[in-house]
Image (cartoon, rainbow, N blue to C red; front, side, top):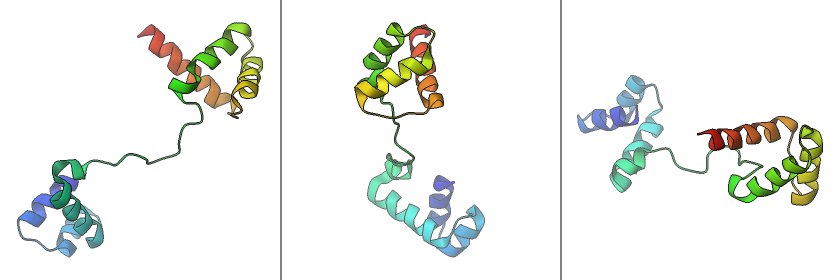
Length: 109
């Protein structure tokens, strides 16, 4: 849609018309054109820093989580509690379990 916006603007349409065609506001259409002019194709990419930051960071927490799991096999809640005390972070059971699944996927890949 962003590229379509740029192409329509290049054809000489104004931002209001482009916005109605693409389903975005005329301000958004103008903003994407400005980003394209200032940054080129890279300006049309979604920027980093969007969304909630992860509580458990792989490069930082991988080894402590694995150590907690090794010392508490078959007891996820105990391993999670041990990791929380050691790291000073809090995570819900689902977040902890999903992180372990990602680690397992990395190992199995």
